[in-house]
Image (tube, rainbow, N blue to C red; front, side, top):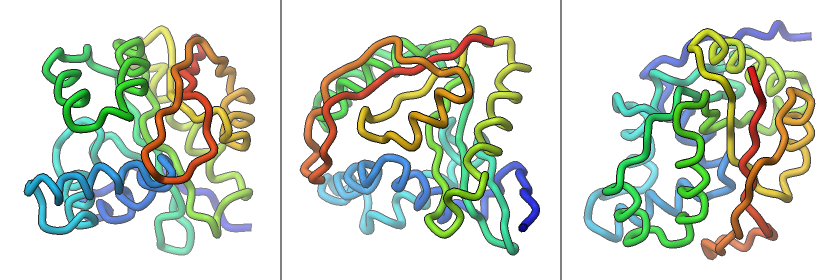
Length: 197
C-alpha cells in the first residue's frame, strides 16, 4: 500500500488545485471561469482557474494541503477560518452568478468557523483513504485556530462525501435550494454541515 503523505500545497501545484476544485464542485468552478472569459476578464478559462489558485487569495494554494502518491498530487483540501462576508461580495454574486446565491447565503453563516472550502481526490486514488486523511488533517489544523466549529457546504446527492463527513461528526444545520447551473446535475439542495470542536 502506498504511504499516505499529506503536506502543505505549493504554488507550483496551482493547476492540480484548480482541477481538484472543479471536481469538488462538479464543474461549477469551470462555469465561473468561463464566465470570466465571457466578461472579458480572462482569455482562457482553465488558465484563469490556475491563476486564481496561484494567487495569494484566501481560497488559493496558501490554504491548501495536498495528498501525494507516487510523486504526484492525489487530492487536496482547501480550508481556513471563514472571514465575515462583505456586502459588495453579495452584490457581485447576485449580478454575475445568480445560481450561486443560495450557496453564498450558507457561506455567510460560516463566518468565524473553520471552513472546508474545496475537497477532492483524483478518481484513481478514490476509495484508498486519501480523502479521510485529508479531512482529518484539515480538522486537526482547524482545532488549533480557536474556531468553535468546522463547517462546509455539500450537495444533498453527494452520498459518498456525506458519509465521510458524518463519520467525522458533521451534521446538516441548514439548507438552500439548488439552482441549476446548466450542468445537468441531479441535485435538490445545498446543505450546510457543521461539527463542534
